[in-house]
Image: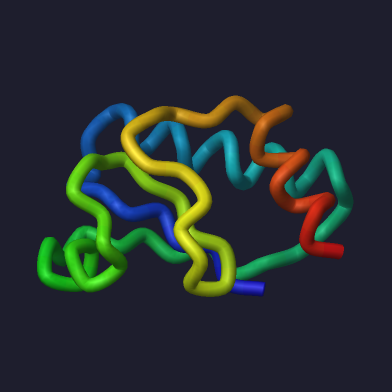
Length: 79
C-alpha cells in the first residue's frame, strides 16, 4: 500500500502525515507514506486544494486534515 500526502509541506500537511503514521501504528499496518510537494504531480492527481490524501493513487480526501480515526476508517475499508 502506498499512501501519498499531497501538499506544499505546510503545517496542515505535516499534521496529516503525522495522523497517517499514527493511524497505521494503531492498526498495526505498514504502508509507504510519501510526501508529494511537486505541484505538477499534485495537479496530475486532480487536486486543487491541499492537503490531500491518496491511497494507492486514489484520492480519498481533499482540502482538510483528517483525524487518526478518519484515516483508520479509510484504511479499514481497503483490507
